[in-house]
Length: 221
Length: 264
Image (cartoon, rainbow over all chains, first blue to last red; front, side, top):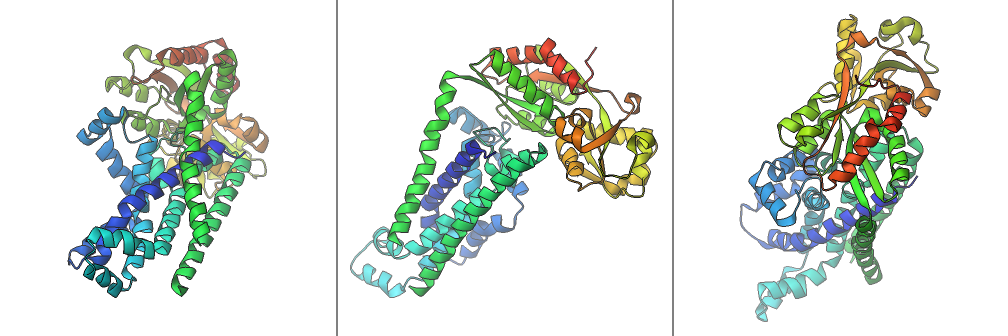
């Protein structure tokens, strides 16, 4: 009934994507929130692209960029021993791109809502940009950062189109829960599909409730 | 709030690491192959795998079902499958041409058949009407597999053209990604009638849920189904053993049980 292999895989994928997004999302968001460069809007547009682009477009580009015919793809294959598409690593890369706005946008909002005088005070005391980022901006924006991580985690749980394109539904490697449900429906195994769908529904609801709780707390605080 | 943060970090971390370790454990001791199989094999191949694993307890066979065209392009793009069981013979041949499959590994294993299937409560007497069942007034949606990349979809379109009904029903067609999805469309009553694989129609669930008419074999190009061993396989021996099982007496018996004709 419950596809525990797929559930474990999906949680692992969402966890990895959220952690990678934390690492690359924080500096990117801080830069977006503090820069006065006018070209910033184009970077913001690129970050938001996954919100409007069909997953098939991202999936197609990933196949082209990292497939066996591209030099980039062959380079990665030589380094890691396998191609990026149809591997867990490939899904992490796809998920990071696909969930980027769900991390970066809350991060950026949090950094923007910081009181600028606090940052100025830190600067007057001689703190470097990195020190301000580490010791002032990040600790004071943790609600927004947590909200972004929770949202990107949840968004990765529900990912389907990109995984369908670049995953190949390999059990234990790329068959995530959403793909497993798709396969179960095609096997006319409606009971399993129902059980796993309900699981995903309940987990997603719980995670989103947490995200909104954080948001409310954030607004009041 | 701090507690929540700690909890979440813990959850994320625990979801990242322990499952990782657990997932890798059994792979070390066991030999494992991944088979890319045409969706019409869904129920028959599951049985063959069970028999195979009974015979070789140290072997694990995972199967990914899909349309032959999609599986072909995934293997062509480097997907890590060991064996490809197509619903036609051209995709396996093309893989050999592109050096993605072993030259001498091509083997025909079955010939598929197309049926027109309706659920039990349908007013259409499909056995009596034959192809004319598609023209019945109660038919609003006809499910077939996508002819772009599914051999069964191509066979269905060819049969409808040959039997002279295609032009009248083109606006009623709904396309499944593969033949199992087309079957699911009718099984769930989303479509009223479907042209699906006989092997799916005789599976226990669909046999109990509906009835079918076998489309004459001369109405569409022969659905010769072939398989190949993927060049990049890391388990050539196990893959060969599994191939032997499929074309051996046990495999043939199971395939015939699911309505496949044996290749000449």
